[in-house]
Amino acid sequence: MIVVTGATGNVGRPLTQALAKAGEQVTAVSRHAVAMPDGVRHVTADLAEPASLTPALDGAKALFLLLSGDLHAPEARPADIIGLAAASGVRRVVLLSSQGVATRPLGPSRVAMRAVEDALRESGLDWAVLRPGGFASNALAWAESIRTQGTVAAPFGDVGVPVIDPADIAEVAAACLLDDRHAGGVYELTGPEVITPRQQAEAIAAALGSPVRFHELTRDEAKATMTRFVPAELADDTLDIISAPNPAELRISPDVERVLGRAPRPFDDWVARNIAVFR
Image 1: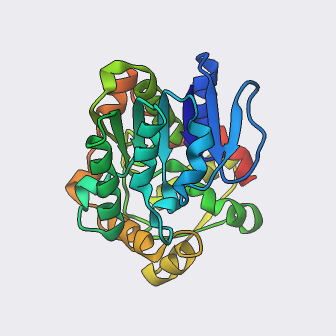
Image 2: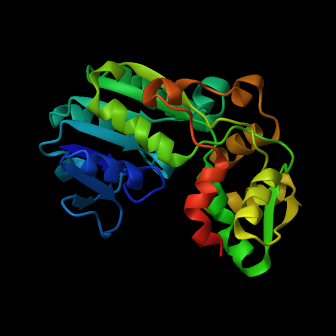
Image 3: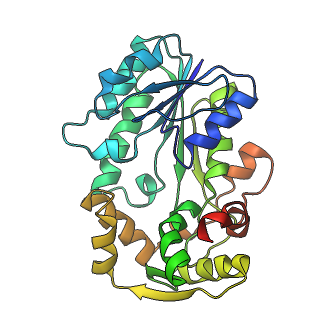
């Protein structure tokens, strides 16, 4: 049995579906009860309280660990989850980390994630670490303003990074969970091309067949919006990257193709699959 945390999110949902389709027994973990595919067990847990994950880990052979905001919650002890997994008999953990652990190692959120990576390496378990850059699905934050005003508001409109489709992250995670060849792998995951926020808005407009205006936010305006959803330190670390990506953050990584045998999907593909949310 494989446990997927963050199972209702942009990575966890397609990962859960892929593992179930492959015939694996899956336990999906999220904070709230939600509908799951047939045959998928669901457990509610809050990763900021590692002990709440205990029922989900009973009988598990592998764990996909997505910490997200739980990494930064008050009193959070994310490394305890790894110890709990080992004590529960889990043999393999695939950790969704961040590209910034390597490219911006001194950022506060990256220091915290590096500590989790180190705890995993020292755990004695089989492991793999996934380090994606920016997500194509971050464009979902624009859905309401596009639907109601035909507008995208974002900072640094002409500064791009190679955003990755979360479905590609999910496929790489599934491979790492199921295939022994990926044990000990650290994979940097990017899309196939650098794309700016303005270009993303243009891609959405083209798919809609209607214009979308672009309004450029200041850094302070963007941070005020972001901190409604994420801790301030994570907002600052993210804004540092998207305002002035360094050469490592602009690099197109070969790792998706190395694992999956195909190139990563471009942003246009993600838009085509998700265009309904912008209508």
